[in-house]
Amino acid sequence: MAQDGVGPLPRKERLILELLSSQGPLYGLQLVDHSDGALKRGTVYVTLGRMEAKGLVESQQEPVPPGAIGLPRRIYRPTVLGERMLRAWTAFARELAWEMKP
Amino acid sequence: MTGNSSGPRVPGTTLLTIARLLSHEHLISTVVQPTISDLQREIAAAGPHRFARLRAQWRGYWAFWTVMLVAPLTSRPSPAQQAGAIAFPDAVARLAVGSIVAALLVIVGPLLGVWVAAITAAGVPFALVMHAWYVRHPSEIPAPTEPKRRTPQINFSSTEVPGNIGGLIFVVGSVFIVAVGLPSVIWFLFVAAVAGSLLAWALVAWHASHPKRGLPENLIVLR
Figure 1 (cartoon, rainbow over the protein chains, first blue to last red):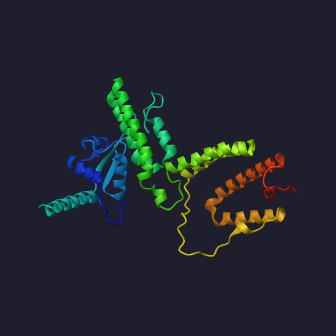
Figure 2: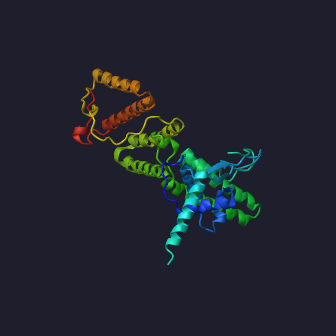
Figure 3: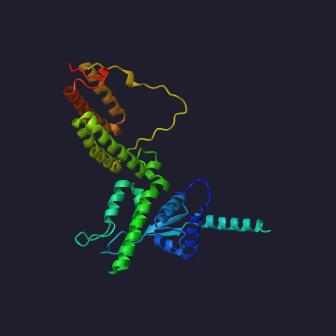
């Protein structure tokens, strides 16, 4: 469910979008592993849930093979809106860094 | 949840049960289940190594309880809440209500006697059953919004109702009108009527057994 307006992109959400864009679809635990400690396993799904509600990422449950034990995992990928947000913020950050150069 | 019911217990089953008691379905499917799924994968990946399994369990349980504490404070409301339905807000509110009920049970017992304490204690599981029923049959009544100006309304609280057959007809008629006008609250009215009758019966019983206690204006005169 996307929001009407475009809000700021917090640091963790930006990192998740960067990881998903560079590495491809990932599970939550893989995001934690790839983040070098920036993402915690206790909060990564809360952040992902919030991003999904904003329309920045989408998720899908993995198919469960017959006879498998345990809950199915959920794999995340960026949406078009998420990729555009990431590109816009990256361009903005680059622009800002260039403007602040002495 | 997939699994073999006759085989060994799947790790995280109890956690999922706890989460179902404390959280709404949207939070469980988007946040809690993936966390428990990670726990199960890590334990499975640890294999027979005892230390690795303990480490995976510790990390998974820590993540689960972090989720349970953090998610209600940071996550967005469930679709039912977003639609404006009256829904129990989150685990924090449940914890607060649970604490209040427990405190009331402790206080009410010595002060008001065993009958009232027993009825209060019986009300707790009753409330839980009502809540579980509500979760499965959510109300479609929209939550009241803040009125911009005071609107005319009928207030029954100051209406004096005599304690005779006329008063009974008035009360039953009022309830009937509300039930016809708002059919979705009919179960609430029914439960409230039963609970109110039980409470009234308990109060009469208590006052009958303790005629000297309480404020004079609160004494119940049986006719």
